[in-house]
Image (cartoon, rainbow, N blue to C red):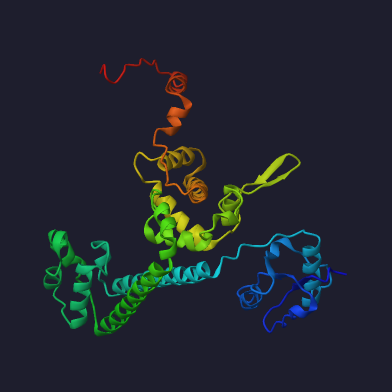
Length: 380
């Protein structure tokens, strides 16, 4: 028998209704099944303590796979303290998360529509993307509008180029020579309207997000001090990890929850894999973009760390390592309310020591058959 104050619930589509508080239930545990846990969790969270549980941490009794068996098993795990609650942010952060996720989807849809537009132009023999980096920019958009309006002369179309693009008018004339028909014009018009709608919705969502993050403006200011982190990326990071960093006792807990910490799988003294877990896909996606941008920052610690790891482990592992480093920095910044402090691009050189680093490099050159003579740069 489970403790009368502990109740486990499990449901799928169709589900089962939750019992009232009159039964003496003070703690409720529930599986994180898609989005179907949300309405029940949000109703009960104000009346009693609710724990959202990771399905990977629970296994039902073999041969008894029913909703009732799952509920009993969840209650037993809660009673014996064998599971931990998952992170469920407060309502303001949940609303911010919904908005940022939807904006991300809108941006992705806009990108997909631009890719469809490029494929359609290729079908018409228009090689505009080979010359113009952004086919829906001002110059590209003017040429596409002229094509839709019926203009087919490549020289006239190339003359619509603006600013620096005017120096490429000869190449543009060649790229705009194709077999653009009324059928292509109809589809291009539809795609441009869809792109404009996505752009308008993105602007509308950004205004909403700007209002939602106003109480957490200090957190945004701290995040934007990290190399490669712009305001939009900072808003997504804040929406995913929340403003209350005390929910994660240590920086390692935050990195593990996000799925950027190396895996821990050892048996008989052998480590079989170091793969990261799935973690939060929205957070990992934006961290990947920030890490990629930070890896190209000049004279910065993150750039030095990226090059150091990429030379030994490869570029993909180096980017994951940067994601881990950035998230560790975020935890300390939120905990101590301090801005990001860059250690500098020569951090690893200074930490190792110039004399030691010099001896190591000289030894490598000697092993390759070279006779090394050093001369200080100022003497040269």
